[in-house]
Amino acid sequence: MKAEGGCYCGAVRYVVDGEPMLKAQCHCRECQYITGGAPNMFMAVPPDAFKYTKGTPKQFKRKDLERPVTREFCPDCGTHLVTKVPGLPAVVLKVGTFDDPALFNPQMAIYTIDKQVFHHVPEGLPAFERLPGR
Ligand SMILES: [Zn+2]
Ligand SMILES: [Zn+2]
Image (cartoon, rainbow, N blue to C red; front, side):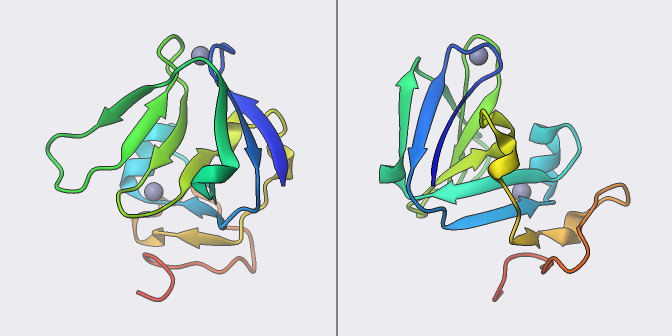
């Protein structure tokens, strides 16, 4: 898969060239904060399949968590692009930042334990209260 994307203002741009490891929608409470309330539509790709091509994102990590994720976002417009999970060799991309989000289709819904009544899970999509196999 090859795709390009970037933030709302265009200051930060990236390219993806590689096979996605996971395409999913996450209903967890944390994702609700960063999406505006909806599930987070994301694609995880191997780190070497991802490269920033313009600009430098700002990083944020919560200090009150033991193993916080690192969130990378545009320092100008604030668009959150990427999440890095400690111990997980992957770059987790928010698909709304792709130039063409239509290339995304979720394989599963995760963390439905935090699902709100206004969230939509497509019929037939495998859904997990947390992660598959846990
Ligand atoms: Zn921006
Ligand atoms: Zn989540």
